[in-house]
Length: 273
Image (cartoon, rainbow, N blue to C red; front, side):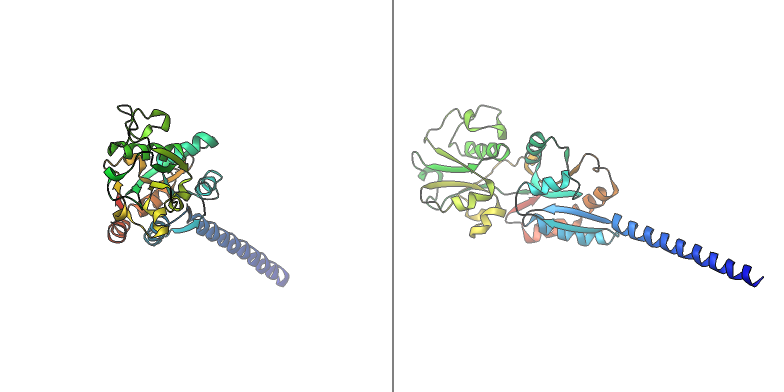
């Protein structure tokens, strides 16, 4: 009987260890499944993610920001499933990435509209811009069209009727001042501002802030906001309806995020939710 009793205790202990191990594994898996990785590139996008993380934490989610240094890495991370979502771009830029890479990124929710426009170190009004002035615009199609649309609003160029922000340099119908266009990577446009022969530079608040400027310093800003260019929460086709993305969307459209945008960044953007 003593041997049977000892054997029973040993079996019970083994079962208990297995059960405990299984529970620890489940707890670990459950904890890991509550992690939402969000790729971002620069403030204020990265700051928004941090505020949203505070909100999501109240519901048991751990939102982790993965900060990158360029305008490709955050999309690469989401498409390769290294990150669950990104917050760094507008929908046309995302669509351009999809068409080039054959990926299936999806715009989930617009969060804010940046105040974009043109800056000049030399001129104080549109009328002062001289014949043959050099104008620096983005070299990617999605941002190029938006920049040209803003120039058209100021009657510096004419685009075909109905072109909107879809235009390219080839579409310009009239260029009365014979402006010369320089196509520059978006991340390098702030540096173009300091070039002695550049009269106008297109830019976002995020990038022009590197040289101490804000939208208040712009020669002119976009007049008609096109919400296709809202900075978006982006995920993949295969996870767009997941609990993680739903929780992230809820946090990023919370009152706390709206208050942050309005109180801390009203000079540079407008909430779009």
